[in-house]
Length: 324
Image (cartoon, rainbow, N blue to C red; front, side, top):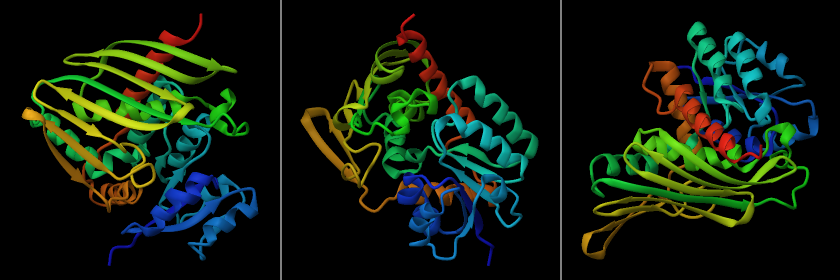
């Protein structure tokens, strides 16, 4: 039997405890082996579902463990590049939370280190592993809606009451665009394979953190607009509008949490077709795809170059929408 990929987690974030830790523990070919946290009481939530997990009191101590093959990094955004580089230097494969950097150019050093070490390093952009997005990509590219004309989407939630949340603080890389703009931007690039040629942004800031962004862009062959916000009632929608039909995803980013994963295909004559994906867990699928790529060299659907392209689009939005 092939030995499972042995994982460590740098930081006991709530997201790691609630989603990625359990996903690593459940994934085929993976073993959740270690957690690094300087706050011992935070380890209890991980020990509840993985009792034999090794606890380290520092990130460096975990990286020094020769029995760890890969690390998952859910640290604040501003720490992603630093610890991804350290992990690669320590000989570990890296799956780092999004956004993997605060500027596109910062990812260049990580790409160079990945190539130098020959290790796997990528952004934890889980939606590309979900069958609803793989199916949407196929439908658009196979012409199910004819020529694509326009893409639009919304991703919003309201965290104004969470004053200590890192997303509400500039020093920790907060803001709606870094947190959820990666979804409305990245999914469009994933489905179409195109990059924005022009982009304009109308951004509302609070304490130097973007809380509402209204984006209009032009890709080579279609137009685009979206709204992302941390100050609006929760909503998730993505539409791909072609000459001969429309694809609508009603829970595109948090399926089975926000709502069921459903693709609705609007066809000529007002015909509708639905495709549902009730059992898919994109976090587990992401971990399994990562391990398969490490062990077999199989293609992985989201590279550092893909992440750089999305970050470049975020950079364009800030360049357009930040006050002079």
